[in-house]
Image (cartoon, rainbow, N blue to C red):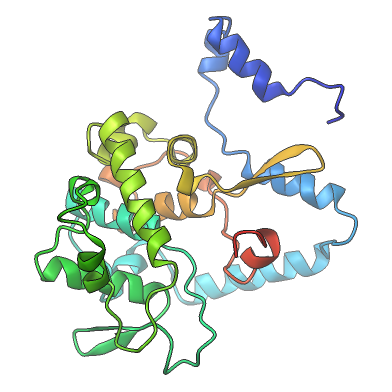
Length: 281
């Protein structure tokens, strides 16, 4: 899009604010536009290119592996740290996990990096986060409560350091940023969703794409996007992971029933993030 062209998204917002959006526009299925952004980057990149033949080979390999291992939504709950109950408490735990599911980088070796001791095992990376939250719940700390996040007396830095206490000398990376994410999310849930993340799911109306967009539009920590060659490019990595986790945990039923789950994309791994978001990492 050239500088002379009107931004279609701004035009849409203007039409909506003036009450000019048609019924057909309102009934259009939700679209995260993640794939469109990826295609635009692929088609307009100069210094980097994708080998289409190798991409297809990688897709075939992944598909064959999934078929061989008989992966299904049931796989998600088989891990000992993932919740087994199918209720709102589990929804809140998943929301908390994916609010904080970022940046586990360490310059230390595997024996010195941040780790959580829980139920006789040491956990690192993503699993250190899940273990820390499960341990906090076992200890009676309401770590998945948005009311708790907003209460700076109950949810103090000292309490949160206890939640994320490490079995090594290294603390959890970006502790202050994680605490800020919780406080911000707690405030947004209070102001916009009556203190319940479940209301976000209900508002999405059974659409995975609508829930991803709702998360990105209302929660800044889920709104990962950049501009490339004048175009807005969406990633929505953790927003999509959150929706996928809910879908997998509930095996596509109940809170996890989404009629358009196939619209959710694969997610860039953490190895890619420093290249895409160097100012953040």
